[in-house]
Length: 223
Ligand SMILES: [Zn+2]
Image (cartoon, rainbow, N blue to C red):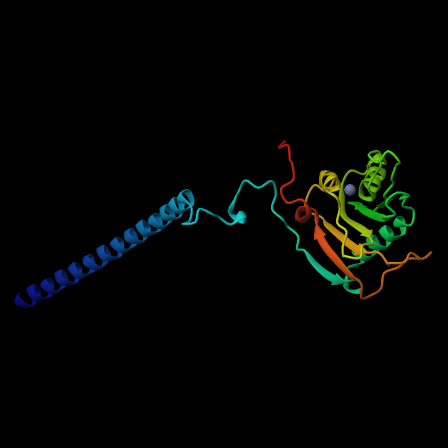
């Protein structure tokens, strides 16, 4: 009988220990849940209060019209993908038709539709100045008037001794209208002296940018 009592006592102690362990683990789990909740609250408070200097990184905002999706970089012409090389060459050829009796500044552009068709354009000046058209808009207007309203890449070519010529502000907004999402824009420098058969050299530097880089906070009417 004494032996049985001893065994019972031992079992009760074991149960007690187990009970304490279970309780500890439950408490620990509850504690961890509280910690997680506290951390979430702390993050929320930090967000609302702002950091010490009152500034956030722009990428943290959810109110931007659109995030930039494509990278921006420079590359040798020979290392560019086929799409970029073809568009730049088409833009370079279109540049030959530029009508620029006043500025003498020739620009060519080419845009590729979603289905692979390419429309090209050049800048066209006018004695009254404002009726003139940029190369980018000439190309897009040609395509849009043929029923093509969605483009997935573009190229602009001009020559300026100081470097790349990127689209003007009006053209950036115009391109954005028909881009639907971020699209690459290849910027090339035309040869300094125009020849009958203009071409790029393998080592020519090309700027690969995108419409969202060129127009990061574009005007949008939310639909
Ligand atoms: Zn323009």
